[in-house]
Amino acid sequence: MASWVLSECGLRPLPRIYPKPRTGTTTSASHIKLRISRTDLSGSSISLSNINKERNWALRVSAPLRIQTVGEEGSERTTDNNNGGEFFDPGTPPPFKLSDIRAAIPKHCWVKNPWKSMSYVVRDVAIVFGLAAAAAYFNNWVVWPLYWFAQSTMFWALFVLGHDCGHGSFSNNHKLNSVVGHILHSSILVPYHGWRISHRTHHQNHGHVENDESWHPIPEKIYNSLDLATKKLRFTLPFPLLAYPFYLWSRSPGKKGSHFDPNSDLFVPSEKKDVMTSTLCWTAMAALLVGLSFVMGPFQVLKLYGIPYWGFVMWLDLVTYLHHHGHDDKLPWYRGEEWSYLRGGLTTLDRDYGWINNIHHDIGTHVIHHLFPQIPHYHLVEATEAAKPVLGKYYKEPKKSGPLPFYLLGVLIKSMKQDHYVSDTGDIVYYQTDPQLSGSQK
Image (cartoon, rainbow, N blue to C red; front, side, top):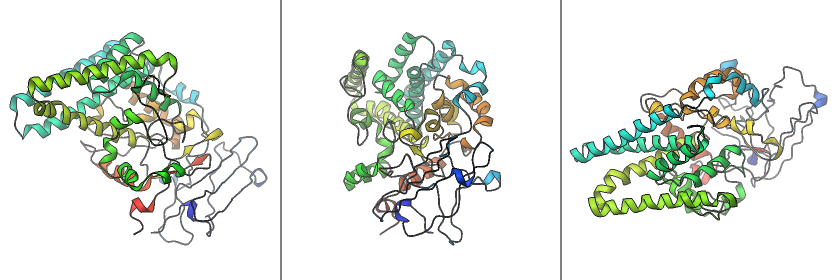
């Protein structure tokens, strides 16, 4: 089946599909101006502007969601199947404000209970030590694989609790958040303040092509400057699921700096002491592991800690990637005046992880978390349900998982084959595919 990419469709007309206005009013033809600039097949984008003075719907779109080839039977089209097949464009400004979503969420969902938060820490730490003790006691190759999966999942759960500390959703006590965050994150080799600050940047700029911090799209010019080996490493499994430690040291392509360097442009001068503190804590944990290798033997430390650590890294990369990629309908990324905190947050995705939902503290309820990161994790599900009537079509209901979310591996593989880069131009852009990596061309 043929599919269209705007950078390759200069010779064919677009289908007559236009989104309806979100205000309930009729937009007259006099309020609409279309400017379509067509270029050659080199990858230049189509610019589309829909100018309405009252609503300021200025759109410069470099790629569509899904556009069918005219006359092609069975081709795909972006529709809302739950609403009689009516077209829905997630890149249009929503008819609601951030304050409308906030008002729909019950007041108690904003309350942070430090005792409840600490109870999750005690539970998870006890499970971590219990699993390690059981694996060391039985010490056979039937138990070890089960231990590695369970312990790597618990390491990921520790990360999520430290992540709450970083957002301040763990408690209102800054010192408590910092102490618990350092203990949890250092134990799994994450520099707490270094990560906390860059993750804050991610939330403040989510959905922005250039300013987003993690798992942001690569502009076409930077993508083309990468050698083939780098492209394959970035988009060929399992390598993307091992990226997190390397990201901590050197960030993503096109960005410079390190989460361990207080002089990195990730941080402002007032944050240097915090970064140094976290780097020292990370170093202390690394030294402890080296010391344990001399006491217990390196192979035992590898089995008890090393393999679960890399399993945790794979959990982290899988979850964080799929919260921003892999929806059946392409989701927009923004630049310039088209970006807003609300519109960027609405491009994030909720995911269902089956039995893992409770273990990793409902981090799959990601949309509301991105818009309101101060909500504690134990209120996210209720807050999401309360916000759904306001969000309407802008909320993408996650596919229900079985006990274990094996289906997400298929979603990940599909996204890795399709979501490679975005156009260098345009204020609303969508992922485009490199045929050399997707296998669509020999």
